[in-house]
Amino acid sequence: MLEKHIERTVCDYARSCDFLVYKFTSPQRRSVPDRLFISPSGVTLFIEFKAPGKKCTEGQAREIGRLKTKGIPVFVVDDPDEGKRIIGLYAVGVDARGYT
Image (cartoon, helix red, strand yellow):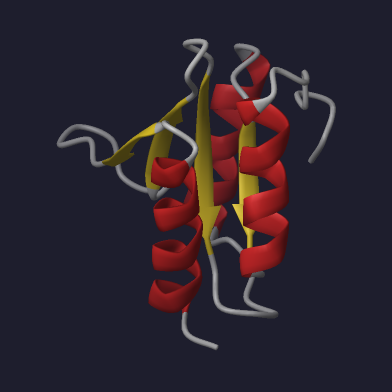
């Protein structure tokens, strides 16, 4: 399965759950996570999408670590069902920050 298919599936699901979904880029910081999601209750989370079995680059792991030290939920997703599960937790207001 391709990364773009996983990303599209999760993003479509998030939109159907009334999330705001943004492609995230930062001109002054490389390796930021792929997408920014804002839940209906205003909780913000990031997801880095990967093809099945692929790992984050060193730069991506560093940026994910920086966000997590600030208490920002960040997930690495290589399976559409797992991504939908994460979105589903935030859609109903469950605190999924402990999930990695």
